[in-house]
Amino acid sequence: MIIEQLRNIYLTDSEKQIVEYILDKKNNIENLTSTELGNKSYSSQSTVIRLYKKLGLNNYREFMTKLAIEKKEYRRAEDILNGLPFQKFASYEDTKNTVIQLYEKILIETNLLIDQNTMIRISNRLMSASSIDIYGIGISGNVAEQMAFKLQSTGCCSNCSYQNGLNYYYIQNMNNYQSNVSVLFSLTGSNETMLNIAKILKEKGIYTISITAKTETELIQLCQENLFFGNLDYQNIDVMCSIFAAEYLVNFIYSLIISKRQS
View 1 (cartoon, rainbow, N blue to C red):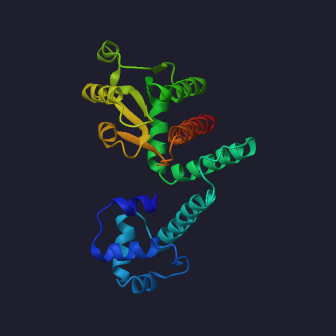
View 2: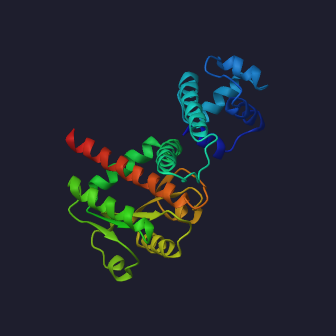
View 3: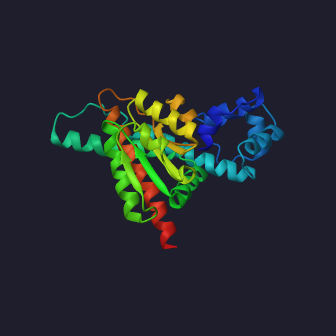
């Protein structure tokens, strides 16, 4: 998530010059020293050091290694469907190839938004929860129901349930709410019911996790942890892309929990 951080944190003018240079597709950065990067971006070595420390990285080599990998992934995502119309469903083969490539692209986009520490915290919190509620309405309900079933199958929590709407009485009378974890899915844009659920859960002091698009700022602000799926805005099939990504995140969490329990 180096590139995502660079796009969202506060940067000085000299730091912006470095970021502009390293994100430029034409510039090969893999073998540059910190001094060379400073010179080529018309800044300085000290600014380069300040930049990677601002990202929480220990050294320049770690910064450049992670950045180079992410740049390759972004380039690969851009190239996957180059020249192929997204609505190319004219034949069986066209449909098959388009769906395969959509899967690959959305997984790359989503992986680039995953923060390792966030994912580990979420899986640990789910494993230690006394009860888990998975909220999903409409099409997102299908993914929420899958997550509830998978978490039940891990045995990490004896009380894991799928909720398809707001049950105010249930929330207000919840026992051991401080060790409850609630997961909220929102796939297709701001959902007023889901926002109301998030507000009530926050007032109650329940630990909440959203799985949503990064554009859903109001829901994100209401939750303690957030997982994002790639932003693929393709006419008529953006919902399908969101479902691909949400299912991937669910399977990632499920696999982490299985791994932890086996070890």
